[in-house]
Image 1: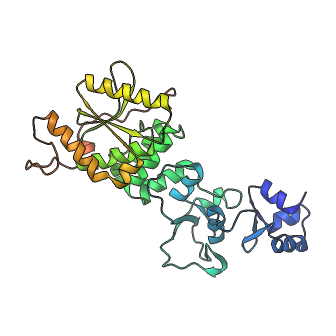
Image 2: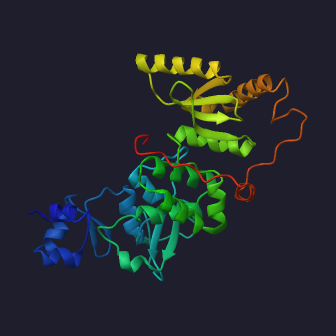
Image 3: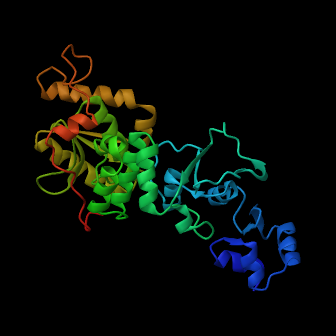
Amino acid sequence: MRVEEWVEGAGGFARTRELLSVGATERMLTSAVRTGRLRRARNGWYSTRAADDPEFQAARVGGILAGLSALRVHGVWEWTPDRVLRVVVRHGDSRLRAPTGRRRPRDRHDRRLRVRWDPELPRRGVGAVTAEPLLDALARAVRDEPPEVAAIALDWACREGRIDRLDFESILTNSGLAGRRVAALADPRSQSVLESVVRIRLLRRGHRIRAQASLIGGGDIDLLVDGRVAVECDGRRFHEDRFGRDRQKDLLILTQGMTPLRLGADHIRDSWPLFLEALDAALIHHHGGTPRVGNSGRRRRKRLTARTRRGSGAAPPEFPTRAER
């Protein structure tokens, strides 16, 4: 077996001593590096990964992917991904390197690199394990990221069946104030990143939101806003049969006294103010000419916060059934 095949079979990373123990020689390793079949992540470590692979860069720093960077390996939802590399290293480690060069020390002022120290990391080790376990990564995202980013990550984990109710509640409960802030925004019934983004923005605007509200006659509304406007978040779906079902759903919504509003990713990204105008106009119609939020002259409703959510007596969020996932 060629040395690079052994490294790939070990998870893409291997220590020098591990390779020597299975019959590799220093000359073989040097040749593999020179021909591009292997790369040195840092002294004593070889890898088959590309130099711009986040897992390779984390190993080069001296740790493993952490938080949101680790969740990206699993396919987490993100609305506006950043370029920050999040790495967790062993507690007390100090000989850290830059992600782009094993001989360059870490630049403490590099905003594209965020390092955390973890006293429990030695038990997990570094090597074939290149990223934090899912639950650890979610918990770190709740503690380290803006609440809306962490809430979207939790929505994704629930939607994909990666965590259950106990995991969800444990992560939030054990994250203190940060967990309470995220709890006010997360909803396990979210079906897509678009739903999560729209729901969070409208919650912060002061609206009451009910996700996956049932329609008489079948089907669910993505987001029911203030009990009156049915917001449908459409992905890239162009099939004719889907178009017909969506129009049928709009008719059902209208017959049940609500106004349907549809928007896609482009609307959220480029035409959000226009959507808000349309939403306010629909609410004005339902409330006899007076909008419930916005520039109506009426006092704006209290912004939803962790404190108001916790003391409101609201029921815990519902989890989707297996059939809904």
